[in-house]
Image (cartoon, rainbow, N blue to C red; front, side, top):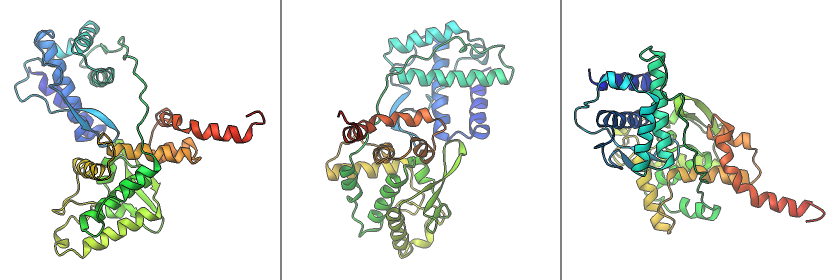
Length: 333
């Protein structure tokens, strides 16, 4: 029996029980298909490095190496092969990835996929043990989050032509991202009922369907209101998606890919680094909050981070502020 059936069962578990996004499920699928290819031929003729990899920006959570769809061909590895995997098979797979010069972060992600898959198989009693239990994840390089200076953010926010409907939408969109630190996936998922104009807050549906309420600045709300007024005045308004806050030129809910394209346009217009992503605005939000004295746990809640350690990556940017406070307060400074 093909391994495809088992993989699809696992993906359905991720989608319907764990509430993973379709994009994340696709990533897991591509990792598992690559592992199946490796098991079938022992890595001798497995797909070249990069076949499964595409440079993409996740919706939710940061710039990431996402995965393309699995290859469009019958999967030859069997269910039995996949369930008979031992720790040594995983180690050989790691060696294969290293030979193909996969980054440590990509390797760690693939390992995470396998851990999750075999944990699922153990839970369903398909295997007697988890072959990943004795495998350590490679130590990761610490990468500091990239962020924009406040002046750069100002230039970016002021780039759209707000006299047009789409320009007003883009200004409202950028203001919302910077004001709240929401992930781009959370931004495009916003509905009109999620915007509390009186309470100055957004109701966010985050990763894993975890809901949170986050404050939003009056400036950003004013731009959303202006965009909505222009949208209602458009002759095509009746045909637009009546739930979504941000819609494309056809009136349908905006996609994360469209947000990236719009950002690229404005980055070029104001001469900023084209490598900046929507997630950079999230980093900038957290960085600027901490620089201006916000409590780390408050920023954790605003970002929707489950673990404080995730938020702590931003503390490096507070060094200058701490040094300034030291210089002002210490008698020997």
